[in-house]
Image (cartoon, rainbow, N blue to C red; front, side, top):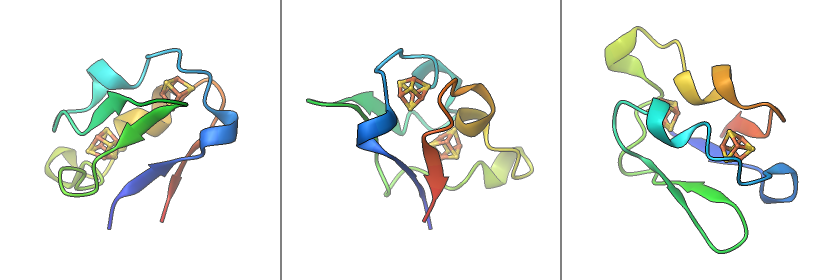
Length: 63
Ligand code: SF4
Ligand code: SF4
């Protein structure tokens, strides 16, 4: 399982990228993207998902 960014709602503000402990987030063509291979839903940090906490448009969702 990994988180996913809803492309239409992402403003590419970049706030989430430095918060990810697994460097799973990067800028893509139309929006930021989460590498499903790297995202562990912040399990090692107790499951408090850093990217969701900081995203101003609430466009990061669990899949
Ligand atoms: S849930 Fe955690 S590990 Fe997954 S992308 Fe967000 S900050 Fe990174
Ligand atoms: S914090 Fe939200 S709006 Fe900003 S780049 Fe990340 S996913 Fe996109």
